[in-house]
Length: 242
Image (cartoon, rainbow, N blue to C red; front, side, top):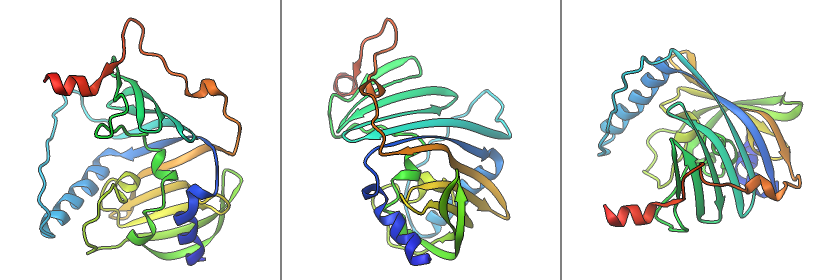
């Protein structure tokens, strides 16, 4: 079953043509911060050099956060809605071009390859091909999630690996998780539920509460307009003028 789980993660994006999903991201903020700082300390010990900018907020930090996200994919179109710093973000992609509304601003990259944009937490449940070399499976069993057959895999992060380009496991765990529980869809290979543990407790849950595959998504799914009274701001033009 361990080999099956790794194969599912490696080939997930070849197992569906369209995807419609919604879900939630829950965090224990204090424990998540500890896991994050443990990761930074490990990187320092391993000799990695980086700078970290910390922003101070006047708003007291909640003990827990529970934020919802949605994701639609019908290549070359993608759409995602999610929360960033308590504000809703809505972004549509067509290939390399994106249009995004959030924090009172409407922006686009005009197709520039050097201006990226995230797709929210949900993308880390469906973009799974990079995960297998980064994890060790300790235990796996048959299970179910959302009335779908799954492989319930308990995994650990591999340590001491050479530095790799790309996000790796960061978006899935955001910290040095001691252990991760994954519910992997046994037909489609996406992760339906991921729980990250640190020092004996769960600090982050990223999961789907609804999912559909190979549906015909209406074209209006990917229609987006700038915020009322605003025009699209080209992020490239803003960079060149600054």
